[in-house]
Picture 1 (cartoon, rainbow, N blue to C red):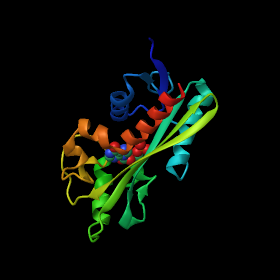
Picture 2 (picture 1 turned 180 degrees about the horizontal axis):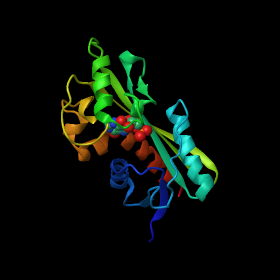
Picture 3 (picture 1 turned 30 degrees about the horizontal axis):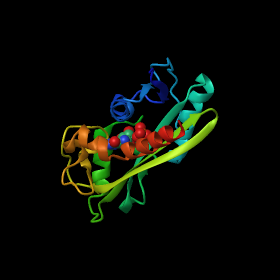
Picture 4 (picture 1 turned 45 degrees about the vertical axis):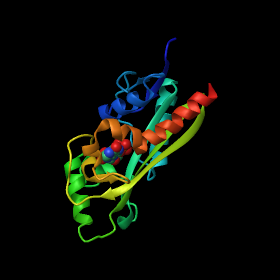
Length: 196
Ligand code: IMP
Protein backbone atom coordinates (compact mmCIF):
# COMPACT_ATOMS: atom_id res chain seq x y z
CA UNK A 1 0.00 0.00 0.00
CA UNK A 2 1.25 3.47 -0.84
CA UNK A 3 2.32 5.45 2.17
CA UNK A 4 0.33 8.52 3.09
CA UNK A 5 2.15 11.78 2.39
CA UNK A 6 2.66 14.32 5.13
CA UNK A 7 4.62 17.54 4.83
CA UNK A 8 6.95 18.34 7.70
CA UNK A 9 7.50 22.11 7.41
CA UNK A 10 11.28 22.05 7.82
CA UNK A 11 14.51 21.58 5.91
CA UNK A 12 16.49 20.73 9.04
CA UNK A 13 18.13 17.41 8.12
CA UNK A 14 18.61 16.40 11.76
CA UNK A 15 14.91 16.79 12.45
CA UNK A 16 13.89 15.08 9.21
CA UNK A 17 16.10 12.11 10.08
CA UNK A 18 14.66 11.95 13.59
CA UNK A 19 11.07 12.15 12.38
CA UNK A 20 11.57 9.68 9.53
CA UNK A 21 13.14 7.24 12.01
CA UNK A 22 10.00 7.51 14.14
CA UNK A 23 7.21 7.83 11.51
CA UNK A 24 8.89 6.59 8.34
CA UNK A 25 7.34 3.11 8.33
CA UNK A 26 3.85 4.48 8.00
CA UNK A 27 4.19 7.85 6.29
CA UNK A 28 6.18 9.42 3.50
CA UNK A 29 7.51 12.55 5.15
CA UNK A 30 8.09 15.38 2.68
CA UNK A 31 10.35 18.32 3.53
CA UNK A 32 9.84 21.90 2.34
CA UNK A 33 12.42 21.24 -0.35
CA UNK A 34 10.53 18.13 -1.48
CA UNK A 35 7.44 20.25 -2.18
CA UNK A 36 9.55 23.00 -3.76
CA UNK A 37 8.84 25.54 -1.07
CA UNK A 38 11.75 27.95 -0.75
CA UNK A 39 10.04 30.63 1.32
CA UNK A 40 11.68 31.53 4.59
CA UNK A 41 8.54 31.33 6.73
CA UNK A 42 8.87 34.01 9.43
CA UNK A 43 8.66 32.77 13.02
CA UNK A 44 7.30 35.96 14.54
CA UNK A 45 5.19 34.62 17.43
CA UNK A 46 6.36 34.82 21.03
CA UNK A 47 5.24 31.29 21.92
CA UNK A 48 6.21 27.86 20.60
CA UNK A 49 2.55 27.19 19.81
CA UNK A 50 2.31 30.42 17.81
CA UNK A 51 5.37 29.66 15.68
CA UNK A 52 4.33 26.06 15.01
CA UNK A 53 0.92 27.35 13.93
CA UNK A 54 2.37 29.99 11.57
CA UNK A 55 4.50 27.42 9.74
CA UNK A 56 1.83 24.72 9.42
CA UNK A 57 -0.83 27.22 8.35
CA UNK A 58 1.44 28.74 5.69
CA UNK A 59 2.01 25.36 4.01
CA UNK A 60 -1.59 24.29 4.35
CA UNK A 61 -2.87 27.55 2.84
CA UNK A 62 -0.32 27.70 0.01
CA UNK A 63 -0.13 24.02 -0.97
CA UNK A 64 -3.33 22.46 0.40
CA UNK A 65 -1.38 19.52 1.82
CA UNK A 66 -1.69 17.87 5.21
CA UNK A 67 1.16 19.35 7.14
CA UNK A 68 2.79 19.57 10.51
CA UNK A 69 5.33 21.99 11.90
CA UNK A 70 7.24 21.98 15.14
CA UNK A 71 8.83 24.56 17.32
CA UNK A 72 11.13 23.72 20.18
CA UNK A 73 12.62 25.65 23.04
CA UNK A 74 15.01 24.93 25.86
CA UNK A 75 13.40 26.24 29.05
CA UNK A 76 15.80 26.81 31.94
CA UNK A 77 14.23 27.11 35.39
CA UNK A 78 16.80 29.49 36.92
CA UNK A 79 16.40 31.81 33.92
CA UNK A 80 12.61 31.93 34.19
CA UNK A 81 12.13 29.75 31.13
CA UNK A 82 14.73 31.44 28.87
CA UNK A 83 15.91 30.97 26.18
CA UNK A 84 12.54 29.29 25.40
CA UNK A 85 11.01 30.40 22.12
CA UNK A 86 14.22 32.35 21.40
CA UNK A 87 16.52 29.29 21.71
CA UNK A 88 17.81 29.44 18.12
CA UNK A 89 18.70 33.12 18.39
CA UNK A 90 19.83 33.22 22.04
CA UNK A 91 23.32 34.58 21.26
CA UNK A 92 21.96 37.07 18.72
CA UNK A 93 22.70 37.38 15.02
CA UNK A 94 20.67 35.34 12.57
CA UNK A 95 20.55 32.47 15.01
CA UNK A 96 21.45 28.80 14.78
CA UNK A 97 25.01 29.37 16.05
CA UNK A 98 24.91 26.50 18.52
CA UNK A 99 28.38 27.10 19.93
CA UNK A 100 27.61 30.76 20.69
CA UNK A 101 24.19 29.83 22.13
CA UNK A 102 25.66 27.20 24.45
CA UNK A 103 28.48 29.51 25.56
CA UNK A 104 26.01 32.23 26.45
CA UNK A 105 23.83 29.82 28.39
CA UNK A 106 26.77 28.36 30.31
CA UNK A 107 27.89 31.88 31.18
CA UNK A 108 24.44 32.93 32.36
CA UNK A 109 24.23 29.82 34.56
CA UNK A 110 27.75 30.16 35.95
CA UNK A 111 26.68 31.26 39.43
CA UNK A 112 23.47 29.18 39.53
CA UNK A 113 23.11 25.99 41.52
CA UNK A 114 19.68 25.23 40.05
CA UNK A 115 20.57 23.67 36.68
CA UNK A 116 17.10 22.25 35.95
CA UNK A 117 15.88 22.62 32.37
CA UNK A 118 13.49 21.07 29.90
CA UNK A 119 13.19 20.81 26.17
CA UNK A 120 9.63 21.44 25.04
CA UNK A 121 8.37 20.74 21.53
CA UNK A 122 5.02 21.82 20.18
CA UNK A 123 3.70 20.32 16.95
CA UNK A 124 0.86 21.96 15.02
CA UNK A 125 -0.85 19.60 12.59
CA UNK A 126 -3.36 20.80 10.00
CA UNK A 127 -5.48 18.61 7.78
CA UNK A 128 -8.80 19.38 6.11
CA UNK A 129 -8.85 22.79 7.79
CA UNK A 130 -8.64 21.31 11.30
CA UNK A 131 -5.71 22.07 13.55
CA UNK A 132 -4.40 20.05 16.49
CA UNK A 133 -1.47 20.64 18.83
CA UNK A 134 0.78 18.02 20.43
CA UNK A 135 3.36 18.70 23.14
CA UNK A 136 6.43 16.75 24.20
CA UNK A 137 8.65 17.54 27.19
CA UNK A 138 11.90 16.02 28.39
CA UNK A 139 13.23 17.17 31.74
CA UNK A 140 16.89 17.25 32.66
CA UNK A 141 19.72 19.56 33.60
CA UNK A 142 22.37 21.76 32.05
CA UNK A 143 25.85 20.46 32.80
CA UNK A 144 28.87 22.75 33.23
CA UNK A 145 30.89 21.82 30.13
CA UNK A 146 30.00 20.52 26.67
CA UNK A 147 30.23 16.77 26.27
CA UNK A 148 29.67 14.59 23.20
CA UNK A 149 29.53 15.05 19.43
CA UNK A 150 26.14 13.71 18.31
CA UNK A 151 22.91 15.59 17.72
CA UNK A 152 22.68 19.36 17.35
CA UNK A 153 21.80 22.60 19.11
CA UNK A 154 22.12 22.39 22.89
CA UNK A 155 22.59 18.58 22.96
CA UNK A 156 26.18 18.68 24.34
CA UNK A 157 25.10 20.50 27.52
CA UNK A 158 21.72 18.83 28.20
CA UNK A 159 21.62 15.73 30.36
CA UNK A 160 18.15 14.11 30.39
CA UNK A 161 16.69 12.92 33.71
CA UNK A 162 17.68 9.33 34.52
CA UNK A 163 20.93 9.49 32.50
CA UNK A 164 24.50 10.56 33.30
CA UNK A 165 25.35 11.40 29.68
CA UNK A 166 24.26 14.32 27.54
CA UNK A 167 22.02 13.93 24.48
CA UNK A 168 25.19 14.43 22.40
CA UNK A 169 26.83 11.44 24.15
CA UNK A 170 23.76 9.21 24.17
CA UNK A 171 23.45 9.36 20.38
CA UNK A 172 20.46 9.46 18.09
CA UNK A 173 19.08 5.99 18.78
CA UNK A 174 18.51 6.67 22.48
CA UNK A 175 17.64 10.33 21.94
CA UNK A 176 14.95 9.42 19.42
CA UNK A 177 13.26 7.23 22.01
CA UNK A 178 13.17 9.72 24.87
CA UNK A 179 13.34 13.20 23.37
CA UNK A 180 10.83 16.04 23.52
CA UNK A 181 10.32 15.73 19.74
CA UNK A 182 9.86 11.95 19.97
CA UNK A 183 7.17 12.44 22.63
CA UNK A 184 5.32 15.07 20.61
CA UNK A 185 5.58 12.93 17.46
CA UNK A 186 4.32 9.86 19.36
CA UNK A 187 1.22 11.87 20.28
CA UNK A 188 0.78 13.00 16.66
CA UNK A 189 1.25 9.41 15.52
CA UNK A 190 -1.28 8.06 18.05
CA UNK A 191 -3.76 10.66 16.82
CA UNK A 192 -3.18 9.79 13.15
CA UNK A 193 -3.49 6.07 13.79
CA UNK A 194 -6.60 6.45 15.92
CA UNK A 195 -8.50 8.55 13.39
CA UNK A 196 -7.82 6.24 10.42
P1 IMP B 1 13.44 24.78 16.47
O1 IMP B 1 12.41 25.79 16.69
O2 IMP B 1 12.94 23.39 16.56
O3 IMP B 1 14.27 25.02 15.23
O4 IMP B 1 14.45 24.87 17.67
C1 IMP B 1 14.98 26.09 18.10
C2 IMP B 1 16.36 25.88 18.67
O5 IMP B 1 16.28 25.01 19.80
C3 IMP B 1 17.34 25.19 17.71
O6 IMP B 1 18.04 26.13 16.94
C4 IMP B 1 18.26 24.48 18.64
O7 IMP B 1 19.27 25.34 19.08
C5 IMP B 1 17.37 24.12 19.82
N1 IMP B 1 16.89 22.74 19.70
C6 IMP B 1 15.74 22.29 19.15
N2 IMP B 1 15.66 20.95 19.23
C7 IMP B 1 16.80 20.54 19.85
C8 IMP B 1 17.31 19.27 20.21
O8 IMP B 1 16.72 18.20 19.99
N3 IMP B 1 18.51 19.28 20.84
C9 IMP B 1 19.21 20.40 21.09
N4 IMP B 1 18.79 21.60 20.77
C10 IMP B 1 17.58 21.69 20.15
